[in-house]
Length: 216
Image (tube, rainbow, N blue to C red):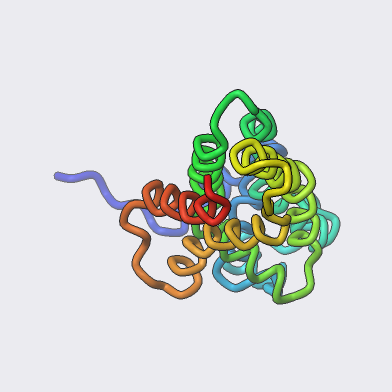
């Protein structure tokens, strides 16, 4: 005879006990994971009350680990945006011993791998639409640490090939190429279109078209 099935109430109690046994850092991590998934689905305008309902946790528990919703969004920013920056990228971009085409292509392939995923793209777009400053802070860091140096390196390469008076790309020109890489994520996770079939090849072709404008 099979063993008797325990009542559901007992199972619920057991699950609650497991939840209570989580260490503080584990509980915080659990809430942060739930928040990332939640904001990617409903946008950063979603409330902590709705988050607590969806995650099946008490709303006061959220505020035990994140004093305000602003603090929670800041933790999301640190986890998925600051962590998407790779420490070797500035050195990669600035390594003048390698051809600029190789550096730029490698950087953008790695960059796309780092940022083109559902939660990253959807929260980034939602934050921009609702006035959160995480976009501005992220883009400021991106520009200062990577795009300004990249623009300068492209200029050096252009003048080395075409002479000191050659026309070189501006920062805005580089931003437009950068935006094309980000669009790969937009088309998939915002527009719901099929993903790019061969992303590295598409990025390499985009970089090639850009550099050919400057006879590189």
